[in-house]
Image 1 (cartoon, rainbow, N blue to C red):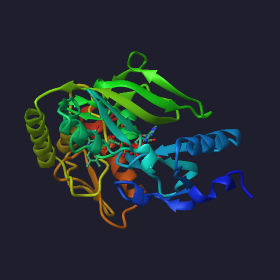
Image 2 (image 1 turned 135 degrees about the vertical axis):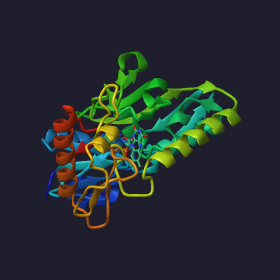
Image 3 (image 1 turned 90 degrees about the vertical axis):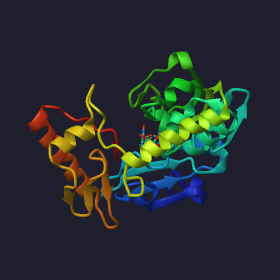
Image 4 (image 1 turned 45 degrees about the vertical axis):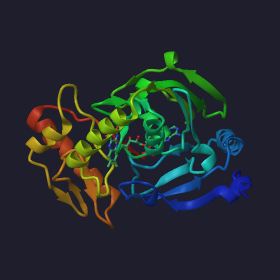
Length: 292
Ligand SMILES: Cc1cc2nc3c(=O)[nH]c(=O)nc-3n(C[C@H](O)[C@H](O)[C@H](O)COP(=O)(O)OP(=O)(O)OC[C@H]3O[C@@H](n4cnc5c(N)ncnc54)[C@H](O)[C@@H]3O)c2cc1C
């Protein structure tokens, strides 16, 4: 008997997390739970809180490196369709935290609503995108937020309005346990022009990034006024390999992995980059990815 037995239908124990991440490395979650609706999600969170069990939220795993030893406690994925609903009413787009950002972008563009097209090609869910204020040179998701429904670690659910939230480069003030859903306010525009802008961003992204490889996107944040990729390239690290992991020769701020790679190999490359860039340019690179 354990305190989470009531949720056995939606719980997998010692579940490898690598397949749920884009880097495809790392160990298991002690418990991976996929609730079927909001009440069940809340009940899991409350039970974990009452019993001091740590909880983490996993989206599409496109910005996470899981350590080889795995993750204690509970990892929750909002993978059920109940969390992936997307609807458009006038210039307001509503989306569940489990909805794919790509679906939300395409539905907005189809409805002739501008703003989110700058996010084309960014993998992941609405929850992950809001947590890290995902974006590109053309804009960030936080610019379009009207309000966000969140759940605290105690299981309390409430709305946070646009004026109580702050977003900055790869940062949001959304620090509750979970993002549940969000509303975005977009601007009506000519659908052909939005689609053209989206296509241009997509072509540029595809040309610059190793999209077809296993990666977690940019490993490091760009230091103010500088490019992390350029600093890593100047340090002569493009193409450097540790085991089955490599600093991409396409984009130096990407680490790509091959099947059989280990999380420890990615961490060794990360340390190497930090050390070499600090030695050469005196810059202390900060991680953009989350290490679990
Ligand atoms: C090829 C590639 C290209 C990329 N390009 C870009 C880019 O151009 N711009 C950019 O900004 N990013 C980029 N990324 C990084 C990544 O796609 C984004 O950070 C994405 O928004 C992460 O979403 P996710 O669902 O995968 O989140 P995950 O990686 O699963 O999680 C990321 C963080 O969000 C938290 N989280 C996830 N869901 C929730 C939730 N419901 N509630 C609370 N917290 C939650 C997690 O706990 C974790 O801290 C790229 C990644 C890849 C692999």
